[in-house]
Image 1 (cartoon, rainbow, N blue to C red):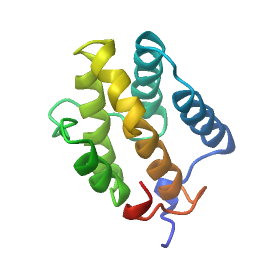
Image 2 (image 1 turned 120 degrees about the horizontal axis):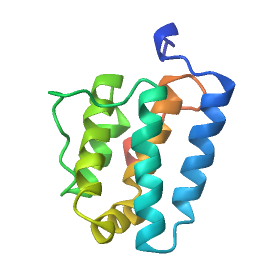
Image 3 (image 1 turned 90 degrees about the horizontal axis):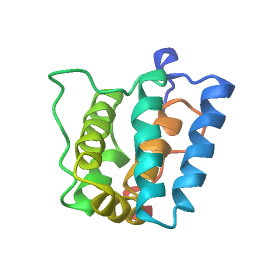
Image 4 (image 1 turned 30 degrees about the vertical axis):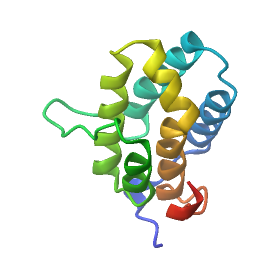
Length: 127
């Protein structure tokens, strides 16, 4: 995959995303998961995947389909994925914890790191 300079990430942004992904992987309760997904939504703006008004929303109801879309997503599709996570966050901590346990926000972070040339892309079968 050829790296587009517009997709690049700074060292600080890379470490921020990696730390957030690590924390999501250790979330042990509904409230912690909700706080971390909210942090991702806020961080998404800094790394150019923050949803804008009018952006489509990627449905989070089918976890496997969500992860398949994210695995090969462009930055525009990642904005839709973040919009889906933001919408899910509005449903309360319980649904957010299920999404975190299934790896949805972690998949978004991994894909953004891959687009930024900071990590190899994850094969669809690896999600």
